[in-house]
Image (cartoon, rainbow, N blue to C red; front, side, top):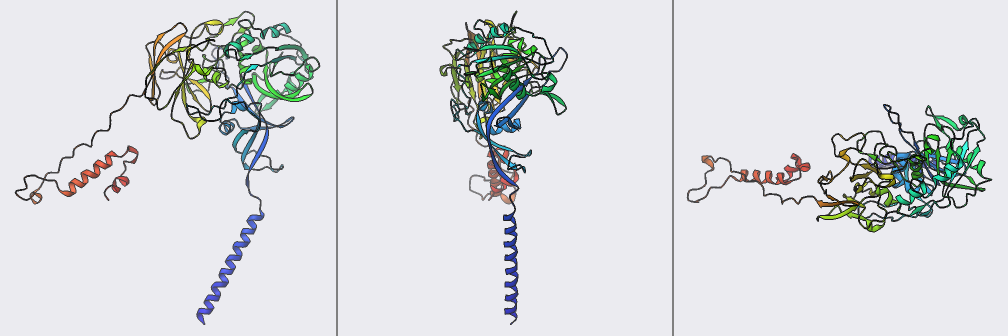
Length: 554
């Protein structure tokens, strides 16, 4: 009887427990999940802010990158820049293209749109992207750069604020900027792209009066004034729309007769052009920018999808690599009486990424290389080279191929319209990190603040090796257009030596061997301990721990 009562009580308790679990599960299923995956589609826009060159003794202002997703005409979602870089891999190849952004975070109460705490998981193209490759190349990196080829017609719109009457330059000045003579934009972009890009059909128009004063186009964001770029583009385009044929234009250069927010801007934006809502390459230039071709070309570079470059000093100043227009446009630059400071060339990796460098002029030294290579490295400024102009020193591929580090070699020579005032004739080394940012290498310790020093130049008779010593580079001699260079592998190491001999412990009388054996043997325990020590010493240093060594005794 007692057993029956106990069993009945047990079943009652079990029934109550199961019912409670079922009720809890039903409650859990009835409540919507706190987190979910959200996919939002739109057009990706990148906008870089670039301040003017700092005055002597003043710190250089920092750049800025805004990342936007245009989800509908006039509707945008801000994306956090560092998350966007990681999620896209090559974020810059997706500028002005239709993409899908996947979030994994809390949803807002506005119909499932991403909340402010959203985390970006991935950004992928949803339309056709002209990519030269979609898989890892011989250097272990994903080459997702979108080629920029053929005629890229730009339209200049000159617009003045309703409260500023001055017109700093006539229309003829802006039209002449697109010319094909040395020192003009048409010539520059053709030379730097090896003839892959031209500005045929580009034209300038204005001045047009904006409907509002300058202050109306500024907003206070995080305590600082910030230009409202979309409104500036929309109002300037609307003012010019009756006069300008935007059909076929692949970029719009906006010139303003007053300061914006202290910066020039470049990248992309959307506005109504010829009655159609269009997203395209756009630059925004105040007078200090459009008076010089170098900063204007820098902003057009952003329009083409080029990020900033940098040097390897590790500070917060982006504009300290004078070898590259996309870093320091001002130092070691040539000038023109009409068009001011002229643009220098762009690093070879970015030119190759945009499809401008013929395949025959690129050489990849594999991470597993075991041979010595000797070749001529021509200057990047040489348009019709028949030799190598870009060398990639590959390092082992990382799980995230966009984070795989490589080193590049290119030659700089003081010659021509744009490069004659470089700091010297030398092989210039860059490392590609941070999802595609090129950092010029400085061999000096500590690295110089500005990389126009001797440490940034590998000259004849000098030798350099990658930090992991996988590759070494030596400049053998100068040639008419570059240098003769030798690249080799890490020196081969000899095989590991045999374990050191272990002397037997001093024997006591009780441990003497029987008479007549003719040899003496160490005690078994001593031999075993020596064997264990030898095995433990053979382990990698990371595993040479007591707990692992103890396992060898079993």
